Length: 154
Image (cartoon, rainbow, N blue to C red; front, side, top):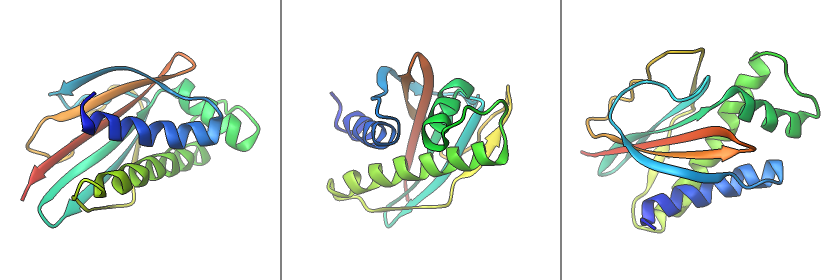
């Protein structure tokens, strides 16, 4: 497996597995060339380092995010509320942090911004990356969580 894919996979499984007790399954990886969001709740964190800038994007399906919130808070939400959005941002922040710790072992140190949250259907996410994003689609109980990662040299 590609080292970058493995690094992202380990970060996702560490965080989601720790908080839900279930490991998400990597279903596919692909190069994402459009800006269409792949979930109903998306957290976008900007990345910056000495030699590169980029973005780390986590898109949750409604069902996957509600499963996570139910495990964390003991109730299943009926709608996307501020609390659900905060949970998405925190999960994305932890996944990005776990990824950055592992990525740093490869010699590239990155800092991340606080994630911005976008919700809804049929929206576009513009990360300002010039390069295409690597996308990894995971499933949690049959519901997608998609990680997008792009990095441009300075």
